[in-house]
Length: 87
Image (cartoon, rainbow, N blue to C red; front, top):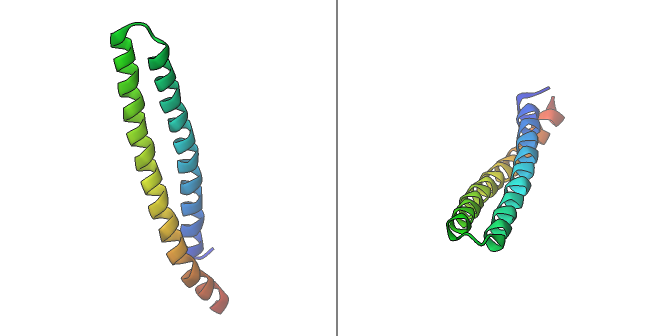
C-alpha cells in the first residue's frame, strides 16, 4: 500500500472515530441539559448546565478537527489517485 493511500485510510478511520465522539458528546450535552431542567436543587442545576456547556465546547472542537481532516483528505485524494495510477 502506498503512503498516500495509507494516510487516507488512517484519516478515514480518524474521521469515523470523531463522528462517534461528536455524537456521544452531544448526547451528553442533551443529558446534562435535561438533568439541569429536571433538578429542583439549584446547585445541581448549575453544575449540570456547566457540564452541558463544557461538553458542547468539546463536541465543537471535535467538529473543527473533523472538518480539518476532511479537507486534508480531499486535498490528498487527487494526488494519491494520480500516483497510484502511474505506478
